[in-house]
Length: 138
Ligand code: THU
Image (cartoon, rainbow, N blue to C red; front, side):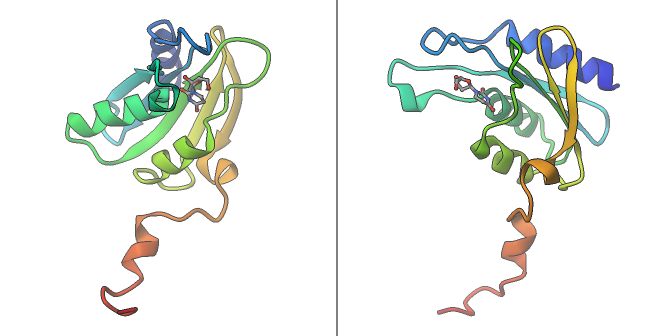
């Protein structure tokens, strides 16, 4: 299962559209029922409009009707670890408990196994909003 997830992230990396940064990233998400959704980074000539691999994978998952992430793999190339950017940690948190495993990989192998909580401690998620009764501050 973990092997399949990592392989999906590494396959997604090969699809990256990264002509500006030349930094290819792939991500793969598994859902509760074991389905895997993957995505790559898609850059744009208007640089800030580029989309991270994790965001692409999340879109694919939501489009298929899923809302719960049970594990994530991210793959990049080179010696330096390709850990999810800050924005993507929060994007993942929207659909994941904070104890889910995050597998940080390169194009060949698993380099680091961590958790979303380690990457995003004391995170703010949907439950935090639910704790604030609507209209309380009005
Ligand atoms: N990138 C991702 O796709 N995911 C991350 O978590 C880190 C950064 C992409 C965005 C951009 O296309 C390239 O890597 C360089 O920042």
